Image (cartoon, rainbow, N blue to C red):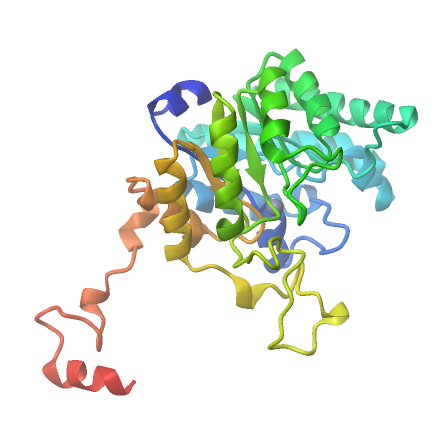
Length: 346
Ligand SMILES: [Zn+2]
C-alpha cells in the first residue's frame, strides 16, 4: 500500500493509527504525568523513534508525529516556550524518518489546547495562533494529513479543522466523549460530527476518554449520522456504563492510590487484553468504521491484535502467540504427555 494517500487507503479498507504516545512513554520513564509535555522529543529522540517503529511493526499504517500537547499553552505551563518550534520540528522529523523507512503515512497532530473559551476573544486568538503555527510546521515537514484530536469543544475542533483545511491537507478530526456524552457546547456527538463533516472534515469520530465498551455504541450512532469516513480510537481500558470514561474509573480493590482516582497512572488493573481490542476492531469495521486505532494506554501488542483482527499480518505477527507449542498447554506432538497431564495443576 506504500505511496497511497489516506483517502485512497480508506476507500480500499481499514487504516490503522496507533496513538497513546504520552502514556506509553510515561510508563517507560520519558514523559512526566501531570504536565504531559513531550519534551522527550528533544531529550531522548531515540525513545520516540523506537516507539514509532514498534507501532508500525505491529501494524500501524500511520506514524503520528508526537506533537500532542506540544503546543504553546503546554510549554507556557512548564516555562519553556523557547523549545516550542524545535520540539515540533524535531517530532515531525523523527516521525518522517520512520514513515519513510516503513512506507507508513505521516500525520501531523493538533490537540485540545485547554485554553479555548467560546466567548473569550483573547483565548480564541491564542488558540488560532497555536494551531496555525503547528499546522505550518507539519506542512513544512510534508505530512500526508493532519489529525486534530481529543477536543471537548466543538468550536475548538472546528477552528483546528479550518486551519488544517487551509493548508490543503486532509483532516482527521476526533472528539473526546466525556461522561455526559456531549461536547461542551451541549450538542450530541452525532450532531457535532455532522457539523464537522459539513465544515469539510475528511474523517470524523472519537478518540481517547472512552474504552471500547462505552465508545462502540457512540461510534455506531455517529456512523449512522455522517457519510464521510469515521474514526474510532478508544483507550484500552474496561470502562462501564456507570464509569464510562477512564477518568471516571474507581478501583475498589486498591486503597493506596493518591486521590483514590486511578487516572492517569494507576489504570493498570483496568487494561483491556489484546482479545478485547481485536473484538472492538472487528465490531467497528463491521459497521464500516475504517479509521481505527487505540489512544492512551495502547501498547504495541494491542495494535498488533487490532491489525490481525482486520486481516493484517504485520511484521510483528511473526511472534504472535502459538500456544500449541507451549511446554504444558501445548498440543504439539513434541510436548510430553506428562507435561500435558500436569497442566491442569499449574
Ligand atoms: Zn488519549
